Length: 185
Length: 185
Length: 185
Image (tube, chains in turn cyan, green, purple):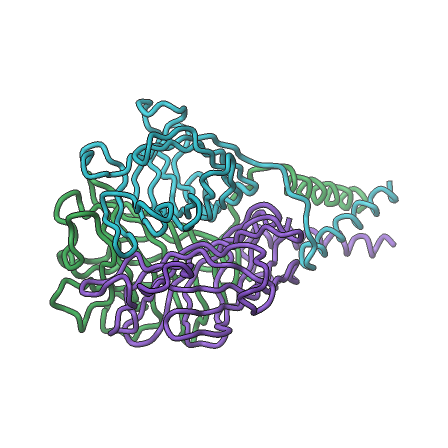
């Protein structure tokens, strides 16, 4: 027993020292996983009623009702308030809103950068998760960072794996977001 | 004594395993709490001298000197550099600057999204705290995430509870920010 | 041995209690350090081919091909996709892209606010690091927050010390970024 106890103490000790000493830790097991969908309908000059997002900035020479034609929309900046659903059906009852902004940031391909918050308000979850990071749209699965959370997700940390589930021209797209949290309170 | 020691070792062990195993932890006690105010004076075409923020983006059909009239300012994007004070008096000596951006992101109510940094430079605090998240303006208290910090607030984690302390039309508003940090170095 | 063991157990115990009790911890040793450079070439109306960034928002009365002349570019908002290099040579083979946005946020001096991601794709590193915070340009060294990471930098935490390594008028600037991570997986 004494031997076992001493080994445990030593393990404990070492672990705590590592915590303070710049050690690279193994990734812990996830403590929470959510799969959600959100739906973006970009204003194009004709869909004011249905649109959930709108361009608010664009490079010189472009206008705000059409995505910049050349340079893969480089510089177009949109603000959005999109419904979040549990499945891929736009008509499903929303469990919250995805609110934030994105902009196209590459000239030679389609690529964007995202900053947004999931504002969840359902029987299952009440709280927010905030995300930010680069989104190379044409890649099937791309990871962005969970940078914070409130409510049920207070101080959430982790990543979200985004995939484009569907899109229609430049007006509608649907993103599947697989959220993996590694620190939960 | 041996029994006590073994119990402690076991507790210690269990805790470390939990840390690695996807356990949902109880929220720790806060390690720091600050209450600060910041004051936003939006440029409206007539107050260039006093303004601390300005619109830099707006949806199609809107202009940059007036908040978008319809749709609850949906799409209006402002950049700000606001004084931070210890109390709710605009004339109090500032202890730092709140710098960042916000935009209105809902069509059917007033709601915004914030990304900003408190740059604190007083005898009490030197450093920055960066926040981001959804801000449903009409709710009395709303939580946003602390996403980072530098200086005295290096790697700060926690939340900020924001409330609108006062406002005058579309030109002036004052926010009370109650910052609660759960991880301090 | 028994005495030593008990002291260790007590230390272990105390440390775990501190973790939950709002204690201010000593900063751990860094677990990773990277020094990288990125190069921004702002579109000015004549350099469409070379430009890596472009204005997409500006205050009332300004245009998108010139930085706002008065008020230290206050309100100018740029989107960028800049090459990252290991040294300060613009011609060096890029190890990734710095993608994000910045805006000028002070009327009485040059100051900006940054939100961006290092998308690294080299033999050494594959993954992203996302940064955000205030950037008082005229200060030699300024710290911004690491707010997240993916891939090799999953859940990275720490700070980045930015310095302006070189600039040419309003068109070109090069930033040196010294990234210090305190939590690595």
